[in-house]
Image (cartoon, rainbow, N blue to C red; front, side):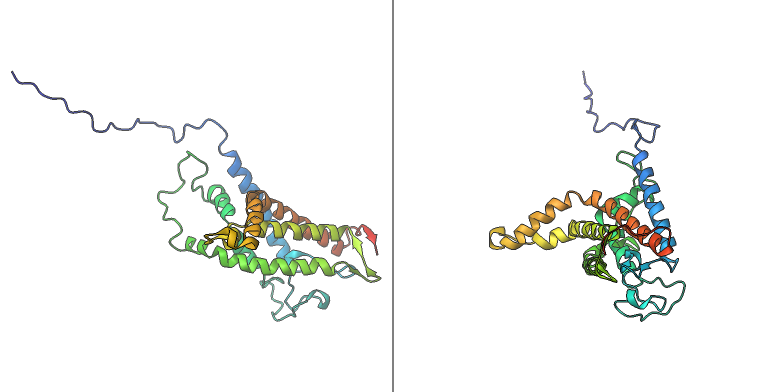
Length: 268
């Protein structure tokens, strides 16, 4: 009598599930909100950048961050703190020196990568939801390989934040001397938020404390690293807040320059 041994099942086939995802919540809502929010901001910023007007309030030295530094021949002399080396062509924005670097800093930001990967590229649109593309090669090929230059974009963003800080400081000069109005509050608040967003960057945190083997031997860098680490936990919120403060500062300066209403002055 012979017996046939039954081999154990080495691996059963996966269950055939027709549905693309078993998620029953509104997983599509967050990427939709991100798509609408980022899309609206990009549309507004693009229109404002190429309007070529209503960017400076001479009475109070208010300069919108969308036009800083102002370096084309269209710039009024008082707003051109770094000269006007570029011609006044329609396709050249007044802030041609800063806008490309700021755009690069935002595009390569770790939070914004997650935001537009999900909302615009659907790669993937949400956790446990299939990718919208057949394959994904990562950030090793063109154009996503440029994501790796985020650290260098951070350095440029820091310099531009210094320029915006200078703009906010000189805005306290009025025709009668020192002046202080609602526009100053908005410009300063925008600069503070921009610094918070810039310093909360993951690259900044790595620069502050990366590759240190003994924090005790570098107390200054350790304190700065702990400060940046606390900001880093709010990086996503700061990314959205700064979009709001940038749009608010630009709209307020535009409204004053266009004569829609007057600045609320407290001093001067």
